[in-house]
Length: 202
Length: 202
DNA sequence: AGACGCATCCGTAATATTCCGTACCCCCAG
DNA sequence: CTGGGGGTACGGAATATTACGGATGCGTCT
Image (cartoon, rainbow over all chains, first blue to last red; front, side):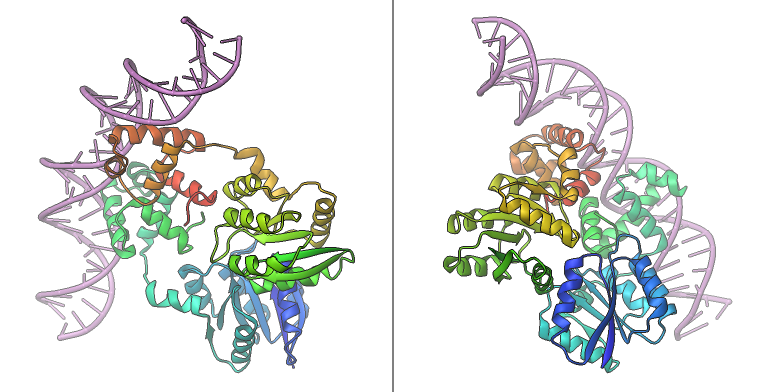
């Protein structure tokens, strides 16, 4: 019998997972939280084998939360669970050390499989995530990220240049590199792509 | 005792709602569907009092589905249920005739309240949606929508003008009207806003 | 009918962006 | 140590976008 802790801000989702896991005899849900803070608080006194967490929580950055949780529960295995899988979440969670990547549209048998794999210390990556893995594994330089953020905020070349203390012309160079890396041909597409990939919020 | 039918593509969410509704004695869940087609099929032989449906389904446009369902179940009351409330969904569902607007982060008591209100024939709009209602009730002209779509697809003034058979200068006029209506000051912000409001996909 | 708001449309001139090429720094593998 | 690759940075000329201002037609309200 293994123990599991749930973190998701939607009560429905928590209830759904609990209901589903009732059908799995070797798993017992020993606690849940609707926010990062609540999770940190409750996990001080618990030591689950598995922790399933959403990355988009009202009060916490997903990957930082993951790292904090790992400090508190170093022996637990972590899985992230999300409705809209994207490359950035995947990369961050992987870096932080998550073992499995699950999506909310999986069915019962796939959840059970994923959990059993994790208990055995194996990775599990849902198809929705692995599709992303093969495509998007681009790294952006610090400067490129700053420039991307500037454009995402609706700034002009001149404004971004002023903010970064470089010429608008140089901003353009970084933008051109971004366009190439992202495989798009305009700033708007670039930002849209960044939103889809979770680099910036909509 | 009233009957309820659930439509959502995430099994977890369906399970969560069912688990939650077990705690409500005057409601019985008589069926569920994971897609629009499945819902249309199953509802041929059912006649629930309430239908709770997600608007974002893999095989169906939310508002069109709503209209189809209403033809099949003319006596049912409809509620839409969504994770990310936005102005466009709200407007479409309202136009289609939904009675209630619920979000997935509501808690149990709020769901129960909403259901009771609906059974009494009253509207219920969750706070997340009503916040939107007060801000975003803008109408866009056909030309503006076409121009917005053009920019969202990463096209230039010239390209949009060519596609719509108008001068790039006129495209700009429409864009300026859009910027004003949306309260933003650049094309990128406009597109980002359009994504957030559900006018275009990310 | 007349006045009005609103959607649609465009020309010219100022401004911003983009194209093309170039250059420096740092790191590290040959 | 030397050459190559990547990140960063910029200038001048060509091109696109924007600001400003004006025009037409089409409903509606009086």
